[in-house]
Image 1 (cartoon, rainbow, N blue to C red):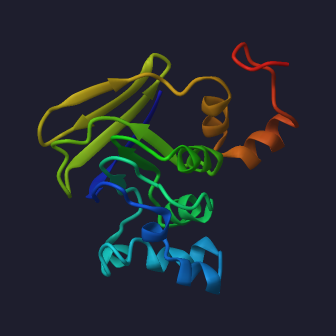
Image 2: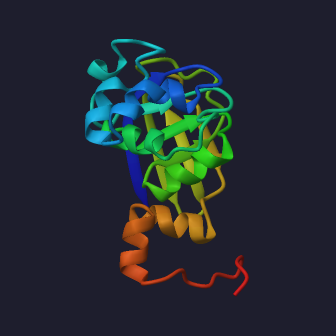
Image 3: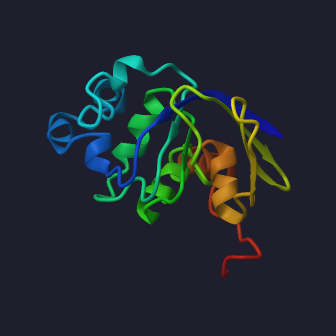
Length: 174
């Protein structure tokens, strides 16, 4: 079992990848270590400076919509944020998150306020999200199959370094 605990950093619905990192910034560089200084600057100009390693990004619906550039996910990881909790994700962002070692959790984020202490427990039976302020706990299904394996390895590159190739799973055709 793995635990991730951190301070909730709240954003709203429809946070697109250009809100995460603006197109203008991506034209200058795609180095996530530089881009993390501009994380969510169009939503909150002081956001990047206020992020502490271990903070958890908490969003509404359709997080990561827009362009499918993976630099949005890598910039969040570079800022020290290990997980994003959202009511729903754009599919391309969801896959980019997993491939880059960022845990995307679809859950009910209603009632999670900015600054709340959140714990995410990854167990064989599922993912449990707990809010210390409200006492609310929500159980979600585990990430399974290849997505769970990639995330457990820390992302796609570490997975392929370890495995050498994609392993056949009961859910994937051979």
